[in-house]
Image 1 (cartoon, helix red, strand yellow):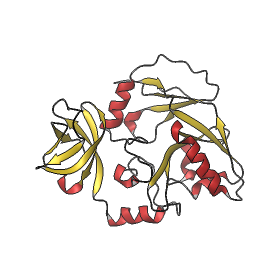
Image 2 (cartoon, one colour):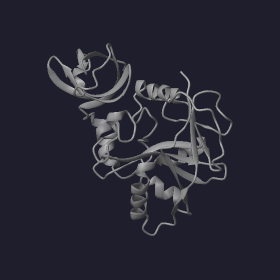
Image 3 (cartoon, helix red, strand yellow):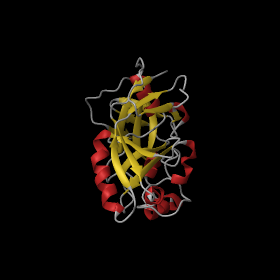
Image 4 (tube, helix red, strand yellow):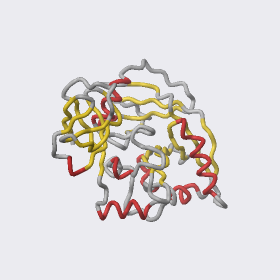
Length: 259
């Protein structure tokens, strides 16, 4: 299914100053030096390794850097960045920008979404003049959910989620060889010791779900997880791993795990 929409829930922040690369490198989960593709998906964590923000870092042909973040998180992110900047030569500024998303006929100036091959491209227009006939918002959500791509405030919860629960490594959002960043030690320990008991999975409802019911996932009468996003017939669930091979039920329907 195709989609082409203007994402009106995104905000852009420019990052300038001589220390901008070094500053970001010490904070984010990904490696800023991988920006040669023009776009990077990453996160900022708390010292305890829990999710604070996720965003795209975009570099234009003039080597300018921008952060593309969900609009309702922008002010909190700016507070965080200004708190950490100390004496660094780095500045942050709001930028008017139109963000278009699509998975058909990639425009020459669009950038491939680095999280997943199915999710298409992102186009950044600082002139805010890009025009398109929008379609397929529901299709985009089905692609997101069926591929278990987490969303801010849905699966990625401030100061609660561990990013490895959401398969952040498979989303190309974390680099385990880049060196230190805030929350790195906890994240690396989880990676190498495999201590996570719950992980996110895409699943499919066998029957029409009763969304009036609790979103708990059951197996053999026990609560073993929860339903997060729903884009029927697909959903994202957070599941205790020992029940991955068991029969699962949620919202009055049997569930099939997709991965």
